[in-house]
Structure formats: structure tokens, C-alpha cells
Image: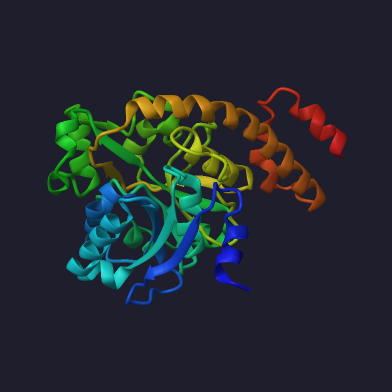
Amino acid sequence: MPEDFMLTKVFSDAMGPCKVIPYYFRANEEADSEEVTIATLVTHNRLAVLSRLATRYKGPISAAIHINDDETRDMILNDLHAMYESNPDVQNHVDVHLIVDRFDRQFNMWRNVAKFFARTEYLMMLDVDFHLCTDFRKSIRANPRIMDKLRTGTAALVVPAFEFIEQKDGQDWKTFPTDKQQLMDLVKAEKIDMFHRDWQRGHGSTNYTKWYESGDEYVVTDYNYSYEPYIIYKKEGSPWCDERFIGYGANKAACLYEIYLSGIDYWILPDDFLIHQTHYYLEDTRKKERKYNKKLYDNFREEVCLRYSRMMIASNLWSTSRADNVKEECSKIKGFKSAVGNLN
């Protein structure tokens, strides 16, 4: 079977025509199977950020890189080659997968490409603009209890995300804190806060007040459907991101919503954190795309609740703890309980 034909089915919910080129560059070093691969998506203006991430992480990265199939294509490829050839850490640790098409911001499709071709058992869904302030891999390996949670496939580990209140303070990653105490000093000085603090629903379920005082991992108990943390989780058996979400708004939240409904709980790591590196947003574009995706997300939530309910009933999991997240979250949707009652 031709590879191109197979991949059109793998990513069949995305807009096309679209050409996926896996392992355009393949990392020189082989990672241990229990390593955490950072799965990220990259556009032309973020190539330098990917290079910094590779040097900082020095571990496996699966990067889905979008190439516009227009007059800019050759320029983007030239810049990609220049970045790759200039940094041995990229050559050693980064698998580069190209998505060549004319469709901007198919974020969930790009996430699926990065996940599909990741070569370790665990991955971290991460936006490339975030700086790794701490060594979360060391924290996980040093705690058998946390590692056991990850191995079950029913737990995802959340690395809390932060952002400087003054955007200019977030431009130089070399000035960022490197441990929790340094971070807490900035929190107390009111120089840094949770990521997107003006949109509490996005990261509020992490419960930052509790995190500031905690020395142990804890489970998310106040989940909401807009929650979009950066998570480490098991590749096998976890849901894929719905590729119908195009553009800004709800794309990552929809992905994490389905992961949660599948029976995967979110556990907050107590000492590790990320900080957003300041960059410019296309606010007009974001506003328009969010309006469309909000309508899509409302319908998606009903659809995915019904789908996972049917799956769990048919698999005799409805009376187990695996169905707790579906029962609790989907009961918030009007008419859900009566619809599920008709399935039994």
C-alpha cells in the first residue's frame, strides 16, 4: 500500500489535499522506550524556538512542522535546513515530520502527526513556546508512585504553566526561575501568575493555590471542559485529537476533554513548571476562529459523551471507576442522563 494513501486515511478528518512526510529528519540518537517524547507543532516563525527547546531538553522530540504549499515553501525549507544543520541537539534528538498543504492552523491534525510518529511509550503534549524551567523527567523517575500512575495509562501528569504579568519580562528565557522557590518569590512579588490568568477556565482546574503549598502530586477534582493543561501521558490507548477543529479556540481543550472522558485522570506534579515565552498573537484571527470553534465544541461535547458512554456500556466498564469521568462531566449536559438510560 502506498504510504501517501495510507496517511490520507490516518488523518482523514483533516482538510486536504495534504501531504505528510514522516521523519523528514530522523534523530540520530535512539531514546529509551520509557522516555517522554515532547510532541509539538511548529510553524516557520517558531523554528528558532524549536532549536532552543532541543538544546534545553536533550531528549526525544517529535515535531510536526507545517510548510505552506505556495511560493514561500522553498524559503521555509531552506530555513528549516539551516536551523537543523546549525544545532547538533536538533540532529541528535528531534524527529521532524512535515505537513505540506495550503491550510493554516490545523492544530489538532498537527498534534496527531507528532503523536503518531513519536517513538517512545510516553509523550508530552506541549506548545513549543513554553520554556522547560525544571527537569520533570528526573522528578518522574525519582518517584516510583508517579511512574506507576503513568504506566497504568489511566493517569496524565500535568506540568503547571505560568506567564509573566508584564509581557516584556517573558522575552528572555535565561532570566526565568529554575526551581519552585525562585518561582514562588516571583509569585509573591506579583510578577508572575498562572498562564492566561484572565481566562481562569483554561488552567484554573490545576488549583494554583493548592500547588503553591503542595509537596506531593494531587488529582484534579474541579475539572471543567475548557481546561487545557500541558500533560505527560501514555501514547498507547489514549484518544487522538479531533481534527475537525481548525484554527484558534477549543482545539486543545477538545483534545483534553476526550482524554479525560476516556477515563484518564489529571495529576498535578508538585515541583515542576513551565513558563510561556512572550510572542505576538493574531488577535483578530483568534477572535473569529474562536466564535466558530465554540459552536463546534458545544456539539462535540454531546457527541463524545454519547460515544464514550456507549463504548463503556458495551465493554462492561460502566459500573467501574473508568466511567467516573464520563458520568460526572457528561451529566452536566442537558438530556444526557435520559439518553444514556435508553442505551442500557
